[in-house]
Image (cartoon, rainbow, N blue to C red; front, side):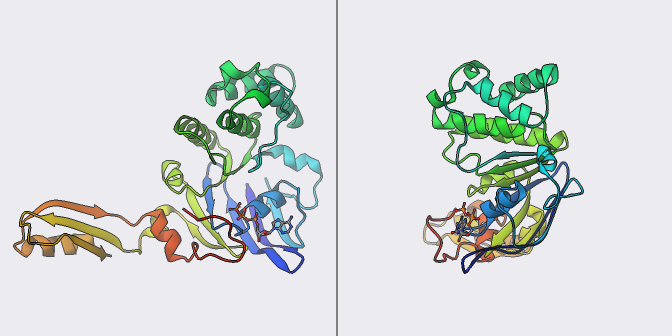
Length: 291
Ligand code: ATP
């Protein structure tokens, strides 16, 4: 559904995108992660047509999106990192605008709005001006604006930033449902456990490129996990062992005659993956701590 090849975007002497390649298939959720300044938002801005790349190719639904007119953007729903709503308009009016931009009118439009309001637990807020809502409620409206009209490609740039657990869970459920219905979803976050909940495939960005791409299982398979144990004998220190073969190490532990009172086998986490790829190395552009 989305295919980007070799995208380059330079700001003065800085390459925000430096040969950025990424595909997202219909029904797939891709978690795009990487430190502050890795190029994630710039990539989304290129896909939405806000920023024109210096070079590279971009196809949306098989159409050359860098040459096509505005029509191809109708396939795309975006929730940008910065909230962009009409504060004086009600939630319903905001969603109506998003739906009409996507070319829907009449009963189909109204049905789409009703559904997305329910999906994101916004029905009771539909007649309130967006400017009177809390930050988390506005985040939900922004995500609803991306999803309404069922676009084939969803771009969600840190949609849960600052969200409370209820908002987060409503958003994640809605994202999963959209993917089940066939949308291609690109999802950026600094909160890695969300990507486990979404069962997303991963794309790790660094320095304006995607440096690793695959399923969570494939990318973490070869990393060491951890074996932890504590023992009945108080003189015996706790065990904390990085291991690529926890089964063999566990067997060795049990054969050793020591008597464990608790054993934990920890699989490699997304955070381990992130760190192993040097994504948390801070650069001059980094503003915040990562994960
Ligand atoms: P974050 O996690 O902080 O959202 P990001 O991965 O989305 O970061 P981008 O916002 O794409 O990163 O920024 C990539 C690089 O391009 C950064 O070094 C940033 O300072 C630079 N950049 C982005 N937009 C502009 C702009 N309009 N003018 C100049 N430099 C820019």
